[in-house]
Image (cartoon, rainbow, N blue to C red):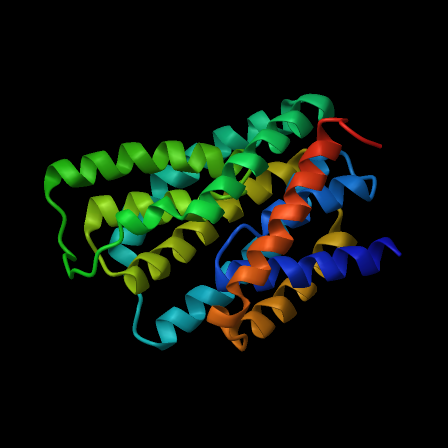
Length: 250
């Protein structure tokens, strides 16, 4: 039954990540509710995230959207930050981590519903960054890496806003760089969780399979018709699971 639940959660997360974002808001609590310690749930979730972003990077590259120079500029500090964030995650008690996750879930839900990042999206083509912007980007993405290594949920929104402000690139370029950087630091954070024994490989593989199927279904879905329905479902799910993490109900 747990395998089925995790597979379905993966499908839902892949679908949400494809049509908008916030898939980890579903998978992390589900993994915890199936009985995994919080750190193990966090580490196991990275397997599906890594596979998802590798596929995304491959697809973007095939379509001509591949910018390794700027991706590495942002990815290196993000990787360093992720090592710090991941070590923080594996050192926290389950109770503290669950309460932090509950708060993050509500904050990310608000971001999903209000979509403030739209104010920062631009459609320019500034591939070259000034020295000051490069320095600002390195510092910013070090802290983004810490957050991503720690909990991951909602990091896509942070990436979109940060990249849009710093680079002024189009949303397609921003997303192509985003998945590359996330793939890089997911590898480093996954290593930390593996070293600390915080991985359930069976759950992770099943989650990744569901995630892939969900992403395929999401890419075929009429986003405009389904957006309202998706927001209603994820709102209800996040409120229920965040309350459960905080022990508000049994």
